Length: 497
Image (cartoon, rainbow, N blue to C red; front, side):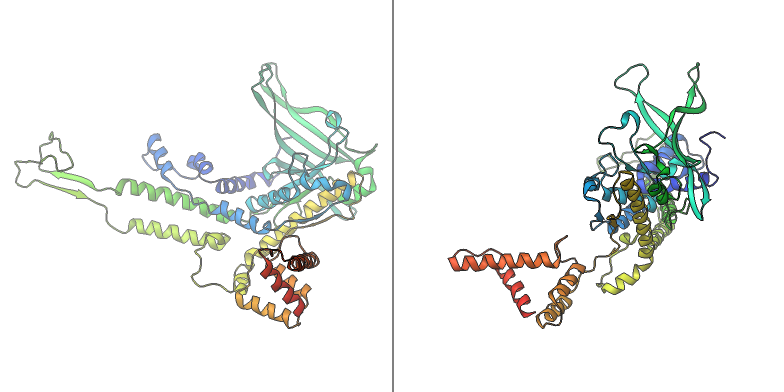
């Protein structure tokens, strides 16, 4: 079995992934697929089909839905605690300059888009390893993970092999400094007899210049912890159960099973709408303009539209008129397109729904979106667990304790603002002594009316400092700050409490 052999469930899933990718990417991607998404009409030649395809509009529901759902999760900063010695990892967890927050968001985007992602932990070795070499996280797209193997060890399901397809770019063999050659290779991560190894495979170059069979490229790499094989270290082996330091993500859990992409139905309906658009625009192209018709005039007569020249015919029955389209055929196409837009909204594209004329109550809004949120929160928890597990392994591999590690991604997806009556009631409770300032400030935090990252104690210290500054300026007869009235009101509220 060659190294590029695909898992039995990979091939069918790849077709769905491609449609979802194209639907998220938008017009250029779907147009490039040509007949895969817009079939050629009977009798169309190449030029006519190209024009037909170019007339179609793309309604970007799928891409905006991914952006909207992911944006709801990351509208607040992630909460990440790292060992003090590894604090710089926060801004670069991949050794390529990608911060932890961005890495997490890409994982969630991938789950929304294709429903699959792989994370593994690696470390520079050989010539790449320098004095500052450290473990780092690697994110792999679903399409690149062509096969995997599992086994059960001590009651725990572990991953023993993963094959990853990669494209690398190397300098041109002829020494051209401005040309790079793309080379396909496979990275095989494997645990055999308790030893973790990484082996690259490339096609053998034949004397004729062609490509031959797949063969190992360079010697296998055996990752080490100091001088010991990586998985011979109990602290590291316990984190993976003795399997590979890899974590599969899908919308429901951390197993390698391929699930249906969450937005597949939305993507397919988006592509169907694209075909409707092609038909509609094509019909409008041919029927949208009045067609002049003249009967009873000599065949060779040059007729010009406009008032500068008269049309003259010796035939008493000659006539001229405009032929225009009438009927309800296009109305049916338009109605069908609107129906599909509303169906897409129901599938998750809530950002595409027309805003309700009356303001919705906060609780009504939460209940209406509970279905979408339940699914999204589950995916956020998958990302949270997988990234935290990978970071824990990387931290331990770096020789540090992962006990301090904390990672939390926002799950409060809908920003609910209080109305004036609710704010007045909250202030009245504070002034009447019915709630403490800490409780009052906590409610303001829930309503997102406070400064990010500032707790009640820090806010109190700021108020005290501003108050002292006002007293000093008043005593000296100086000018009060512009926000003096606002500070006085805060002081009055605190005093009343």
